[in-house]
Amino acid sequence: MDLTVADLKAIGLAAGLAAVGATEATPFERTRVDLEQRKAEGLSGSMQFTYRNPSRSTDPRRTMSDATCLIVGAYDFQRELPARPTNQPTGRVAAYSSEDHYASLRAALEQIAVALRQQGCKALVLADQNQLVDRAAAHRAGIGWWGKSSNVLIAGVGSMVVLGSVLTNAPLDLEAVAAAADGCRTCTKCLDGCPTGAIISPGVVDANRCLAWLLQASGRFPVEYRELLGDRIYGCDDCQDVCPPNQIRRKQPAAEGGGGAWVSILEMLEHDDETLMARFGRWYVPQRNPDYLRRNALVVLGNIGSGDDERTAAVLTRSLAHQSPVVAAHAVWAARRLNRDDLLAELDGCELDETVREELRRPVTAVA
Image (cartoon, rainbow, N blue to C red; front, side):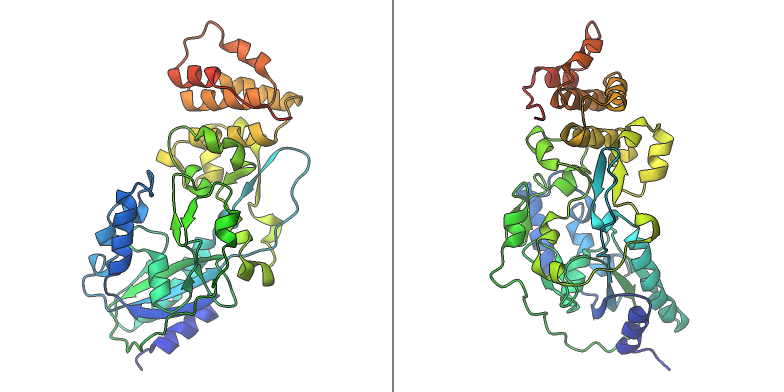
Protein backbone atom coordinates (compact mmCIF):
# COMPACT_ATOMS: atom_id res chain seq x y z
CA MET A 1 0.00 0.00 0.00
CA ASP A 2 1.37 3.40 -0.97
CA LEU A 3 2.19 5.80 1.84
CA THR A 4 0.12 8.94 2.24
CA VAL A 5 1.07 12.28 3.73
CA ALA A 6 -0.99 11.34 6.78
CA ASP A 7 1.07 8.15 7.16
CA LEU A 8 4.33 10.10 7.02
CA LYS A 9 3.08 12.63 9.52
CA ALA A 10 2.14 9.83 11.88
CA ILE A 11 5.62 8.30 11.55
CA GLY A 12 7.25 11.64 12.35
CA LEU A 13 5.07 12.35 15.35
CA ALA A 14 5.62 8.83 16.71
CA ALA A 15 9.38 9.41 16.31
CA GLY A 16 9.25 12.43 18.61
CA LEU A 17 8.61 15.39 16.33
CA ALA A 18 6.42 18.17 17.70
CA ALA A 19 4.86 18.95 14.31
CA VAL A 20 5.00 17.58 10.78
CA GLY A 21 3.77 19.11 7.54
CA ALA A 22 4.20 18.69 3.80
CA THR A 23 4.66 21.03 0.87
CA GLU A 24 5.64 20.93 -2.78
CA ALA A 25 9.35 21.01 -3.68
CA THR A 26 9.04 24.17 -5.76
CA PRO A 27 11.30 27.23 -5.36
CA PHE A 28 10.82 29.64 -2.46
CA GLU A 29 10.95 32.77 -4.58
CA ARG A 30 10.01 35.27 -1.88
CA THR A 31 12.71 33.89 0.39
CA ARG A 32 15.31 34.07 -2.39
CA VAL A 33 14.51 37.73 -2.97
CA ASP A 34 14.72 38.44 0.76
CA LEU A 35 18.10 36.68 1.10
CA GLU A 36 19.56 38.50 -1.89
CA GLN A 37 18.25 41.86 -0.70
CA ARG A 38 19.55 41.44 2.85
CA LYS A 39 22.88 40.24 1.54
CA ALA A 40 23.10 43.31 -0.73
CA GLU A 41 22.27 45.56 2.24
CA GLY A 42 25.03 43.96 4.31
CA LEU A 43 22.62 42.58 6.89
CA SER A 44 24.05 39.06 6.59
CA GLY A 45 27.47 40.26 7.76
CA SER A 46 30.08 37.60 7.02
CA MET A 47 27.48 34.83 7.31
CA GLN A 48 27.51 32.30 4.50
CA PHE A 49 25.23 29.29 5.00
CA THR A 50 22.00 29.82 3.00
CA TYR A 51 23.23 33.32 2.04
CA ARG A 52 26.15 31.88 0.06
CA ASN A 53 23.96 30.82 -2.86
CA PRO A 54 20.33 31.89 -2.40
CA SER A 55 19.30 30.43 -5.75
CA ARG A 56 20.38 27.01 -4.51
CA SER A 57 19.16 27.21 -0.92
CA THR A 58 15.68 28.27 -2.00
CA ASP A 59 15.22 25.68 -4.77
CA PRO A 60 14.94 22.07 -3.50
CA ARG A 61 15.34 20.73 -7.03
CA ARG A 62 18.91 22.01 -7.13
CA THR A 63 19.55 19.23 -4.59
CA MET A 64 17.21 16.57 -6.07
CA SER A 65 16.25 17.27 -9.66
CA ASP A 66 13.11 15.10 -9.64
CA ALA A 67 11.93 16.10 -6.17
CA THR A 68 8.19 16.40 -5.74
CA CYS A 69 7.72 17.42 -2.11
CA LEU A 70 9.19 18.17 1.28
CA ILE A 71 8.02 16.48 4.47
CA VAL A 72 8.87 19.08 7.10
CA GLY A 73 9.39 18.36 10.78
CA ALA A 74 9.98 20.36 13.96
CA TYR A 75 11.72 19.02 17.07
CA ASP A 76 10.94 20.77 20.37
CA PHE A 77 14.13 21.54 22.35
CA GLN A 78 12.76 23.66 25.18
CA ARG A 79 14.06 22.19 28.44
CA GLU A 80 14.17 23.07 32.11
CA LEU A 81 17.41 24.93 32.81
CA PRO A 82 19.64 22.98 35.22
CA ALA A 83 21.11 24.76 38.22
CA ARG A 84 24.10 26.93 37.44
CA PRO A 85 27.43 25.90 39.03
CA THR A 86 28.52 28.48 41.58
CA ASN A 87 32.13 27.52 42.26
CA GLN A 88 33.66 29.13 39.16
CA PRO A 89 32.84 31.44 36.23
CA THR A 90 30.48 29.65 33.86
CA GLY A 91 29.31 30.58 30.40
CA ARG A 92 25.73 30.17 29.30
CA VAL A 93 24.98 28.01 26.26
CA ALA A 94 21.86 28.76 24.23
CA ALA A 95 19.12 26.17 24.59
CA TYR A 96 19.33 25.14 20.94
CA SER A 97 22.96 24.03 21.47
CA SER A 98 22.95 22.73 25.04
CA GLU A 99 22.31 19.25 23.61
CA ASP A 100 22.64 17.91 20.07
CA HIS A 101 19.00 18.53 19.21
CA TYR A 102 19.72 18.28 15.50
CA ALA A 103 20.79 14.66 16.00
CA SER A 104 17.35 13.94 17.49
CA LEU A 105 15.65 15.83 14.66
CA ARG A 106 17.61 13.98 11.97
CA ALA A 107 16.93 10.61 13.60
CA ALA A 108 13.17 11.28 13.54
CA LEU A 109 13.23 12.56 9.96
CA GLU A 110 15.29 9.54 8.95
CA GLN A 111 12.42 7.27 10.02
CA ILE A 112 10.21 9.09 7.51
CA ALA A 113 12.95 8.79 4.88
CA VAL A 114 13.35 5.05 5.50
CA ALA A 115 9.62 4.49 5.01
CA LEU A 116 9.78 6.34 1.68
CA ARG A 117 12.84 4.41 0.52
CA GLN A 118 11.08 1.15 1.33
CA GLN A 119 8.47 2.25 -1.20
CA GLY A 120 11.21 2.62 -3.81
CA CYS A 121 11.39 6.41 -3.61
CA LYS A 122 14.33 8.72 -3.11
CA ALA A 123 14.41 10.42 0.28
CA LEU A 124 17.09 12.79 1.61
CA VAL A 125 17.13 14.34 5.10
CA LEU A 126 18.03 18.05 5.11
CA ALA A 127 18.49 19.85 8.41
CA ASP A 128 20.76 22.77 9.31
CA GLN A 129 22.43 22.57 5.91
CA ASN A 130 22.93 25.23 3.27
CA GLN A 131 20.85 23.37 0.66
CA LEU A 132 17.57 24.58 2.15
CA VAL A 133 16.13 27.46 4.14
CA ASP A 134 14.41 25.35 6.80
CA ARG A 135 12.14 28.10 8.09
CA ALA A 136 10.72 28.84 4.65
CA ALA A 137 9.85 25.17 4.18
CA ALA A 138 8.22 24.97 7.62
CA HIS A 139 6.16 28.07 6.99
CA ARG A 140 4.91 26.92 3.59
CA ALA A 141 4.09 23.49 5.02
CA GLY A 142 1.75 25.22 7.47
CA ILE A 143 3.68 24.16 10.56
CA GLY A 144 3.88 27.66 11.99
CA TRP A 145 3.95 31.38 11.37
CA TRP A 146 6.86 33.75 10.80
CA GLY A 147 7.55 35.49 14.08
CA LYS A 148 8.86 39.02 14.40
CA SER A 149 12.06 37.49 15.78
CA SER A 150 12.48 35.83 12.32
CA ASN A 151 11.89 32.42 13.94
CA VAL A 152 8.99 30.17 12.98
CA LEU A 153 6.51 29.70 15.84
CA ILE A 154 4.28 26.65 16.19
CA ALA A 155 0.91 26.95 17.91
CA GLY A 156 1.06 25.33 21.34
CA VAL A 157 4.82 24.81 21.06
CA GLY A 158 6.46 28.17 20.39
CA SER A 159 9.69 28.99 18.59
CA MET A 160 12.14 26.80 20.49
CA VAL A 161 12.30 24.14 17.80
CA VAL A 162 14.86 22.95 15.28
CA LEU A 163 13.54 22.41 11.77
CA GLY A 164 14.35 20.04 8.95
CA SER A 165 12.86 18.25 5.97
CA VAL A 166 12.81 15.02 4.02
CA LEU A 167 13.20 15.82 0.33
CA THR A 168 11.61 13.12 -1.81
CA ASN A 169 10.45 12.25 -5.31
CA ALA A 170 7.51 10.27 -3.96
CA PRO A 171 4.24 10.85 -5.90
CA LEU A 172 2.32 12.06 -2.86
CA ASP A 173 -1.05 13.75 -3.03
CA LEU A 174 -0.55 17.15 -1.42
CA GLU A 175 -3.57 19.02 -0.20
CA ALA A 176 -3.64 22.79 -0.10
CA VAL A 177 -2.18 24.01 3.18
CA ALA A 178 -3.61 27.00 4.99
CA ALA A 179 -1.06 29.43 6.32
CA ALA A 180 -0.72 29.32 10.09
CA ALA A 181 -2.44 32.23 11.80
CA ASP A 182 -0.09 35.01 12.94
CA GLY A 183 0.09 34.60 16.70
CA CYS A 184 2.40 37.57 17.26
CA ARG A 185 -0.26 40.17 16.51
CA THR A 186 0.88 43.45 18.12
CA CYS A 187 3.52 41.90 20.39
CA THR A 188 7.04 43.34 20.02
CA LYS A 189 8.75 41.75 23.02
CA CYS A 190 11.43 40.10 20.90
CA LEU A 191 12.39 43.40 19.27
CA ASP A 192 12.43 45.19 22.61
CA GLY A 193 14.27 42.33 24.36
CA CYS A 194 17.19 41.94 21.95
CA PRO A 195 20.25 43.19 23.90
CA THR A 196 21.91 44.73 20.84
CA GLY A 197 18.85 45.82 18.86
CA ALA A 198 19.71 43.27 16.16
CA ILE A 199 16.04 42.77 15.17
CA ILE A 200 15.82 45.99 13.21
CA SER A 201 12.24 45.45 12.05
CA PRO A 202 9.70 42.62 12.33
CA GLY A 203 11.31 39.52 10.88
CA VAL A 204 14.56 41.25 9.88
CA VAL A 205 17.78 40.55 11.80
CA ASP A 206 21.05 42.43 11.29
CA ALA A 207 23.69 39.71 11.73
CA ASN A 208 26.31 42.38 12.42
CA ARG A 209 24.60 43.02 15.76
CA CYS A 210 23.35 39.52 16.60
CA LEU A 211 25.32 38.04 19.51
CA ALA A 212 24.61 34.50 18.36
CA TRP A 213 26.25 35.20 15.01
CA LEU A 214 29.10 37.32 16.40
CA LEU A 215 30.16 34.36 18.54
CA GLN A 216 30.51 32.38 15.29
CA ALA A 217 32.13 35.07 13.17
CA SER A 218 35.88 35.26 12.61
CA GLY A 219 38.15 38.16 13.56
CA ARG A 220 37.89 40.24 16.70
CA PHE A 221 34.72 40.31 18.75
CA PRO A 222 33.29 43.83 18.20
CA VAL A 223 34.26 46.09 21.09
CA GLU A 224 30.84 47.75 21.26
CA TYR A 225 29.14 44.41 22.01
CA ARG A 226 31.63 42.80 24.38
CA GLU A 227 29.99 43.95 27.60
CA LEU A 228 26.55 43.20 26.18
CA LEU A 229 27.67 39.62 25.54
CA GLY A 230 27.56 39.05 29.29
CA ASP A 231 27.95 35.37 30.13
CA ARG A 232 26.89 33.98 26.74
CA ILE A 233 29.53 31.57 25.48
CA TYR A 234 27.53 30.15 22.57
CA GLY A 235 24.31 31.43 21.09
CA CYS A 236 21.71 33.79 22.49
CA ASP A 237 18.14 32.98 23.54
CA ASP A 238 16.96 36.44 24.57
CA CYS A 239 14.44 37.00 21.78
CA GLN A 240 12.95 33.57 22.49
CA ASP A 241 13.09 33.82 26.28
CA VAL A 242 10.83 36.87 26.25
CA CYS A 243 8.44 35.41 23.66
CA PRO A 244 5.06 34.76 25.37
CA PRO A 245 4.34 31.41 23.64
CA ASN A 246 7.64 30.08 24.97
CA GLN A 247 7.00 31.32 28.50
CA ILE A 248 3.59 29.79 29.07
CA ARG A 249 4.25 26.18 28.11
CA ARG A 250 5.61 23.42 30.30
CA LYS A 251 9.23 22.57 29.59
CA GLN A 252 10.64 19.08 29.29
CA PRO A 253 13.26 17.92 31.80
CA ALA A 254 16.88 18.53 30.84
CA ALA A 255 18.98 15.56 29.77
CA GLU A 256 20.58 13.56 32.54
CA GLY A 257 23.60 15.46 33.78
CA GLY A 258 22.20 18.78 32.55
CA GLY A 259 23.56 18.51 29.01
CA GLY A 260 25.78 21.46 28.19
CA ALA A 261 23.77 24.40 29.45
CA TRP A 262 26.73 25.74 31.45
CA VAL A 263 30.43 25.65 30.54
CA SER A 264 33.45 26.36 32.74
CA ILE A 265 35.19 29.37 31.23
CA LEU A 266 38.48 28.73 33.02
CA GLU A 267 38.55 25.12 31.84
CA MET A 268 37.99 26.28 28.27
CA LEU A 269 41.00 28.55 28.55
CA GLU A 270 43.12 25.84 30.14
CA HIS A 271 42.40 23.18 27.49
CA ASP A 272 44.77 22.44 24.61
CA ASP A 273 43.51 22.58 21.02
CA GLU A 274 42.64 18.91 20.78
CA THR A 275 40.64 18.88 24.00
CA LEU A 276 38.81 22.09 23.10
CA MET A 277 37.67 20.77 19.76
CA ALA A 278 36.80 17.36 21.19
CA ARG A 279 34.49 19.02 23.72
CA PHE A 280 33.09 21.88 21.66
CA GLY A 281 33.63 20.89 18.04
CA ARG A 282 29.89 20.30 17.66
CA TRP A 283 29.50 24.07 17.81
CA TYR A 284 30.14 26.16 14.73
CA VAL A 285 33.76 27.28 15.20
CA PRO A 286 35.09 29.73 12.59
CA GLN A 287 37.62 28.01 10.34
CA ARG A 288 37.60 25.14 12.89
CA ASN A 289 40.12 27.26 14.79
CA PRO A 290 39.98 26.71 18.59
CA ASP A 291 41.44 30.17 19.17
CA TYR A 292 37.98 31.59 18.43
CA LEU A 293 36.61 29.55 21.33
CA ARG A 294 39.32 31.13 23.49
CA ARG A 295 38.44 34.59 22.15
CA ASN A 296 34.81 34.15 23.18
CA ALA A 297 35.77 32.70 26.57
CA LEU A 298 38.03 35.68 27.30
CA VAL A 299 35.24 38.16 26.57
CA VAL A 300 32.93 36.24 28.93
CA LEU A 301 35.68 36.04 31.56
CA GLY A 302 36.14 39.80 31.32
CA ASN A 303 32.44 40.22 32.06
CA ILE A 304 31.92 37.73 34.89
CA GLY A 305 35.36 36.78 36.24
CA SER A 306 37.18 37.92 39.37
CA GLY A 307 40.57 39.53 39.05
CA ASP A 308 41.43 38.48 42.60
CA ASP A 309 41.19 34.79 41.75
CA GLU A 310 44.60 33.12 41.36
CA ARG A 311 43.40 30.65 38.75
CA THR A 312 41.90 33.48 36.71
CA ALA A 313 45.16 35.43 36.89
CA ALA A 314 47.09 32.36 35.72
CA VAL A 315 44.72 31.86 32.78
CA LEU A 316 45.03 35.52 31.80
CA THR A 317 48.83 35.40 32.00
CA ARG A 318 48.92 32.33 29.77
CA SER A 319 46.49 33.91 27.31
CA LEU A 320 48.48 37.15 27.13
CA ALA A 321 51.48 35.12 26.00
CA HIS A 322 49.48 33.13 23.45
CA GLN A 323 50.91 32.99 19.93
CA SER A 324 47.56 33.96 18.41
CA PRO A 325 47.11 37.76 18.23
CA VAL A 326 43.34 37.26 18.53
CA VAL A 327 43.74 35.41 21.84
CA ALA A 328 46.36 37.80 23.20
CA ALA A 329 44.32 40.88 22.22
CA HIS A 330 41.17 39.66 23.96
CA ALA A 331 43.26 38.67 26.97
CA VAL A 332 44.39 42.30 27.20
CA TRP A 333 40.77 43.43 27.23
CA ALA A 334 39.78 40.82 29.83
CA ALA A 335 42.73 41.64 32.10
CA ARG A 336 41.92 45.34 32.05
CA ARG A 337 38.21 44.66 32.62
CA LEU A 338 39.17 42.70 35.75
CA ASN A 339 41.53 45.40 37.08
CA ARG A 340 44.61 43.30 36.37
CA ASP A 341 46.64 45.83 34.40
CA ASP A 342 49.63 44.58 36.37
CA LEU A 343 49.61 41.42 34.27
CA LEU A 344 50.23 43.47 31.14
CA ALA A 345 53.80 44.13 32.31
CA GLU A 346 54.59 40.72 30.81
CA LEU A 347 54.16 42.31 27.40
CA ASP A 348 56.83 44.99 27.95
CA GLY A 349 59.65 44.61 25.48
CA CYS A 350 57.78 42.00 23.40
CA GLU A 351 57.21 42.34 19.69
CA LEU A 352 53.45 42.77 19.56
CA ASP A 353 50.96 42.37 16.75
CA GLU A 354 49.04 45.53 15.87
CA THR A 355 45.84 43.86 17.10
CA VAL A 356 47.35 43.59 20.57
CA ARG A 357 48.79 47.12 20.50
CA GLU A 358 45.37 48.46 19.55
CA GLU A 359 43.79 46.75 22.56
CA LEU A 360 46.47 48.24 24.81
CA ARG A 361 45.61 51.74 23.55
CA ARG A 362 41.86 51.29 23.79
CA PRO A 363 40.03 52.65 26.88
CA VAL A 364 38.34 49.87 28.87
CA THR A 365 35.69 50.17 31.57
CA ALA A 366 36.72 47.92 34.44
CA VAL A 367 34.15 45.75 36.19
CA ALA A 368 33.05 47.49 39.39
